[in-house]
Length: 258
Image (cartoon, rainbow, N blue to C red):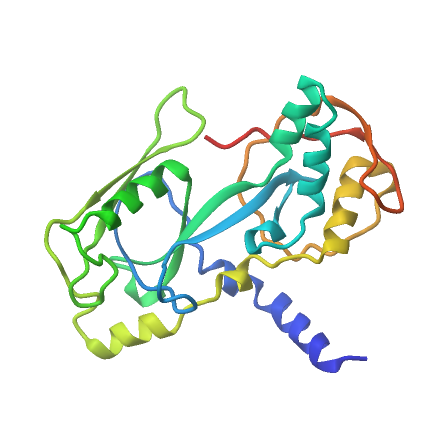
């Protein structure tokens, strides 16, 4: 028995609430934040992760985020190659979706430490355009960086709130006290401690249980959930994933995020 592995697993379960506290939970309103360098990759603060949404009402981190094989993605590719439009669309919807994260300090909440701000493709493109503009310089710099004003607005008839961003015109310090600034940069959570990656075998079991709920085998939920809309499941013919069991039944496709 690997006692160290058991201790690590126990510790991860006990610290679940502490880890999720590192996620910035936004509500409609206006905020001022500072994107800071990511401790675990100081060359790039933007962390691109791929997620499978609404699988058994849960969200799973795709191993494809790190260039590793993903059985759910492989199954989606097989669906797309069956040659008909409906299967192609089903496979396309089953592909993992991009979610980008950036470590930030929320102004007025500096005592809570660095949080992770998650955003979609549109906001990501806006931020990258700002970073690429030489007039702004390195907006993450602790002494000459720039804050970002974020306004989250709910509009009638829209599924998701709109996120508007604006860069502050003046440079500013991350914190007036250098020691506090250094502490903020040093005491960061690794994003992979929040969103754990299942093994190929574990994720394949999740897929099989999802497609064959009557034969489901209990699996350990070690991945934090993200919010995603839920829709009814269309019928889908069986496709062999290439393992010990056939994949068939109703597929609970999730609505693609805007």
